[in-house]
Length: 161
Image (cartoon, rainbow, N blue to C red):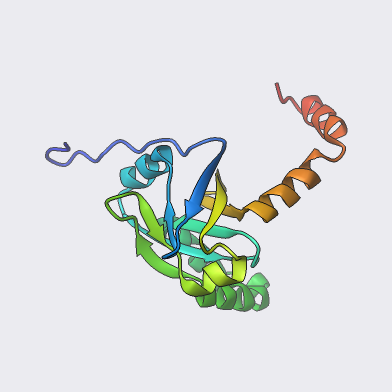
C-alpha cells in the first residue's frame, strides 16, 4: 500500500518470451510478471494495436503518447506517420487490464493478425509488449536462427558478454 505522496515502485519490464493465449472473447491473459509490470505504471491505460500488421503491440499509454508526439512534430516523417497512425488507429484501442490480468484486443486487431482463440507468444521490447501469433513467432525464430554464429561473433566483437 502506498501512503502519502509516495508512488509505487515500478517493476522492471519482463525479459524473455512467454506463452499466453487469446481466448474466444478476444481477451489476452498476461503472465504474472507482465501484469506486475503494467500494474506498477502510474497510468493503467494501454493502447493495443499493430504498426506492421503482423505483430500486435501493447503500449503503456505514456509510451504511445510519445509516439504520437513524434509523429505529430517531426516533419521529416510526416508522410510515413500519416499511414502508420492510420493503421494503428484502425487496428487499435485504448484498454485497461481487468482484475484477472486480461487485456481485450479489438476485433479488427484479432482478425487481421489471426489471434482469435489462439496461443500467442509475448515479449517486451522497445517500451511495449509484442504479441506474436504462433506462426509469426516461428517465422521470426527461423529467421533469427540463420547465420547465428556470425551474428554472435559480430556482437561479441562489440562487447557482448
